[in-house]
Amino acid sequence: MSIVKLIAAGSVAILMTAGTAAAAEECTDEMLEERQEAFGAYLEAHPDKAETVGDAVAIVEKKYGGEPPRDKQCEAMDQLLEEIKKP
View: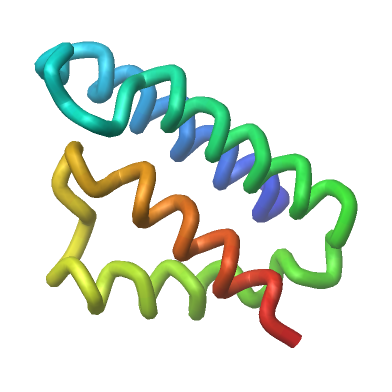
């Protein structure tokens, strides 16, 4: 399974759990989905960056002490995209 497919599968899992989040959160399901789509699109356009995803995830998770809390997932996706865009 390619890294893009793994990320897509992970994104689906996040979206499934995000549906149960409280509606009052700042990071809406739609906002999170947009970021996940942008992340996937970037990887599709830059397949050479797929090998950096694991390192980028580790950097973002380190900031949050593991998986980011639901209200920080949009922020975490933004940071993840920034990390993989680095040269």
